[in-house]
Length: 179
Image (cartoon, rainbow, N blue to C red; front, side):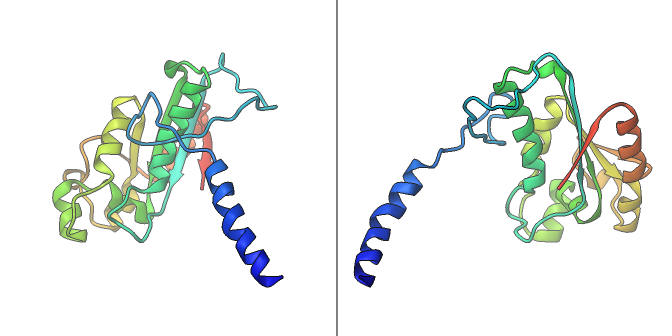
């Protein structure tokens, strides 16, 4: 009986994996932010409304050779909503970066000094900025971590604080997404 179950799991498991949908590249940020198709969602996506969102990004991850997945989420947000029929001009996105995530927006020189590799986030940050995404760094984090404006990627804007940027953007009707 035990061998039969093991044999069946060797047959069924690969079938289940092959049935899983594959993520597809988007049209807005083509190299990042892959999405899955959702067929006939019961909760419809309103394509006539402006969708304003601010991502609160305060952490990075152990593997500094990979893109911060929280930055990738912003690309996914743009790609999936454009695919759902929301015009790109109705998508307003901002990233407010603080805490350990601040090292992920360092320019090539500073990132290399810190991690001995090129910054894998740089192309994504540029692609997001090119599509109108605001990249905002907490000035308090920058001061605490000794990061100057010259140390960051050119797309980065400094704010007085992450708290200030988050409140102001929410006052402008941006909706907060925090992971």
